[in-house]
Image (tube, rainbow, N blue to C red; front, side):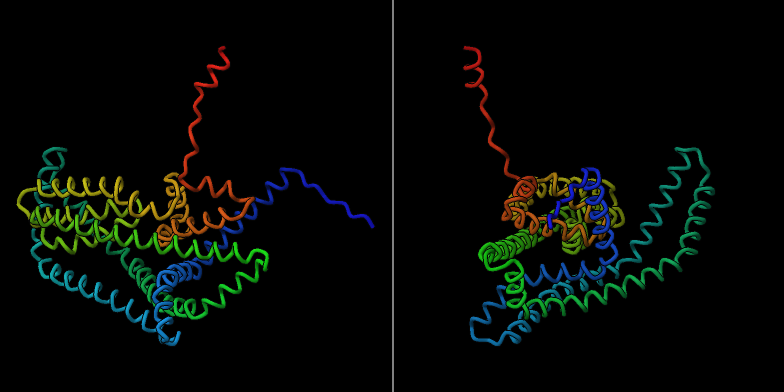
Length: 366
């Protein structure tokens, strides 16, 4: 019996491809509550794996080594959290004074706006009260949504350590599973890909941590020199917010500017804060990120912007955080598969060599 291969027209293949992409994106969006925590857990497990291996090599039981590693990690996170909470408590103690200052600024702004736009202060106050009442009326729904979101966050915070423990414990089994899936002939290639993925993720997160530390110090020093209160707290918060692409930079500078307006007599201090943060942002974008963070992950800027926006639309802020590591993993895989190497090349930042056309033109003109 002779079997004939069916050749589908190009438009049919393109349609099937687009339908498949759409179905994949829909599945990723629907299952984000499962996938996003699991991806975060994989990244954290990759970072903690060397510590577990070190303890295992010291003849410590694997389960005990994982527990010790996770306890140390939680202690570091808890220490950092306690510091932020203590700073936040100090900040809340001066909140009543700031409210009075904000009220004075509002009254001055109302007087200026009424004179400049020729609107009576009563109408501005009436509009403000009306807006305030609308916010209060809609606050019930907002509070309920917030409680649901808080509940989801608590569930995720509980399940991520469980995922990390299981991934670290079953690490040898999972690696052997991947090797067997791709067969004995590809065993060396799979081992190399897994090793490179670990190396890329570890270096990227190390660079990211160094960026947060450097930006925190720069923010804090700049605010201390300007005399802005709670400089260290605002510096750390600004550095953490800076990790959120696009939106984070705006919010990180807005907070200290508001504090400066509320606590300083001159509004110029807020302008100086803006200038300090602008200079730090230039240093971050032109030196810290390219030299310390981006050098660990060889992905070009165009692809970085696209994937950050795409994952942000798909999974929100969490997607923005994990977009670069996921893209880096995809690039490592592409670079080791012959048919996918062009895609790995276009994701990278290696520019092709420039062709010198002068000798060619001389030969043509002779």
